[in-house]
Amino acid sequence: MKVLGIETSCDDTGVAIYDGQQGLLSHVLYSQLDPAVYGGVVPELASRDHLRKITPLVEACRQQANVSLSDLDAIAYTAGPGLIGALLVGAVFGRSLAYALEIPSLAVHHMEAHLLAPLLESPAPEFPFLALLVSGGHSMFVDVRGLGEYQILGETLDDAVGEAFDKTAKLLGLEYPGGPKLAKLALAGNPKAFHFPRPMIQRPDLALSFSGLKTHVLTVWEKSDKSDQTRADIALAFQSAVVETLTIKADRALEQTGLSRLVIAGGVGANLALRESLKQLMERRQGQLFFPRLEFCTDNGAMVAFCGYQHLSRGKRDGKEFFVKPRWDLSERD
Ligand code: KG4
Ligand code: ZN
Image (cartoon, rainbow, N blue to C red; front, side, top):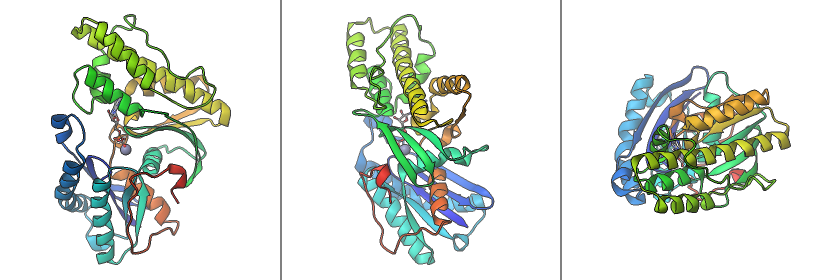
């Protein structure tokens, strides 16, 4: 079964073809350049860019995989959560193409696709596992018992981790999306310069919150000399606070659930300091850590094609209607 996957939930247009026997055949991605110019994602511009790119990207993906449209067995598209106009482009395109080709289609939950992305790697994690999903819009610990069996154990009460990275980066004068740029800047930081609070670690639950840390960074920044070295020191102190908080909470989640496999996914999963810290945690706990290759941490079409394949191959498909859900809880994905 060959599944075309389409991702247009935010500002990346991702297209991929996944084959049940041969695995991932091809994947292409177009990352919009506008965010750096506008200081963030402008929904209307993102939708227009998706519209411009989707057809040439599907064509490029098809050629790379050396398959014709008539070889496709199904189409999976991201239906939410995300920006409504951006989602509509992928949904209308995907559903219409499926209609024209007379093949089934399936609406995919963006966070479920992130969560399953590590299964594209080898070795793939076996169920059950604990997932730490950290992206620009969501941050959560999920108890994953099997495909479609997701229990959210704790979520952020305010900013998502990626959002906290982006806002702190902006304060330090870095362009959107600032997460990866802040991580790079932190490499030059002096670990002894600042120590920032680790939010929520006193609470026994698995909730996260980053607004207090953000305020703390702002206060320190305003009082500082704003030199290049101070910027790097603040970047490092911020990253260390986030990484240690997530590591402590991940440890707690593993303890509470008795799980021995940890999966990290979502854009912030590309952060090397976080990966290293979680690697050490899993060594200490004698468990296993899994994560997607760097390019599949951030938004991409491969995870959507893969997630769609998993459900489609088990007989799930939508009717002829299409739908998008800008707000869509992971636990209500069915
Ligand atoms: O999963 P993703 O591509 O989009 C959403 O679904 O939100 O995540 C994007 C987020 C952005 O906030 C970006 O700054 C952050 O992931 N990010 C990083 C790194 N790479 C991407 N944050 C910290 N360190 C990184 N290396
Ligand atoms: Zn995402």
